[in-house]
Image (cartoon, rainbow, N blue to C red; front, side, top):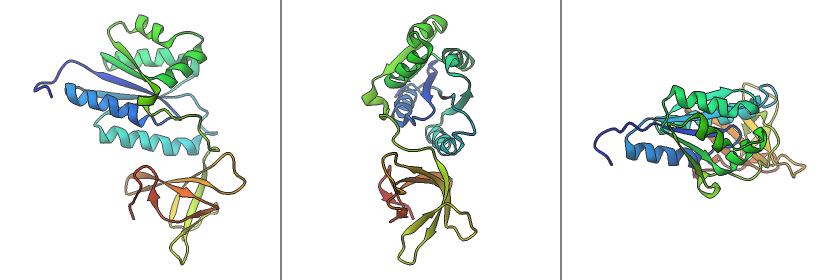
Length: 222
């Protein structure tokens, strides 16, 4: 690791709806090696009311990642056709010298604007190097396989499991967001909730949570 901080400034661009955790980690690793500031830009072009529950979960995860890697989180809400303008403005504001984008997200943005995002950024932000990280190394999942999130509540059963319900009540043990699998007629999916300033996701099968095991870390936190 260099003994002195460099003049590099890294901007990682993430599209809302894809956590891009590995991409952010790659940016954080480079920033750590170079001893330079890290900025995470989240581009949000989805309707507020229609996706409010999804955003409640995702934005918390983005903030958690930013805190973990000592990065500044920047969330920009705009229209899809303004993507390059938002990146250009943010890169200028933070004086970014390196801009990182995931391959799959770059392809989506390119399709949306009808032109190459990379070519535009190379022209509009000539002072920064542009990096397109391959999908396999950017943690970019395939299409999201869940319905939009809905508010839900977990009530503990006498056998230690938890029942998912959608009626609020003071006796509820946990309040969060339920994401139902698209290809099911039952309440199978993921329940996301906050606990001690962290975001946890647990599996729901037939409306029941067998144990509060966080999916990502596969460890029982409770």
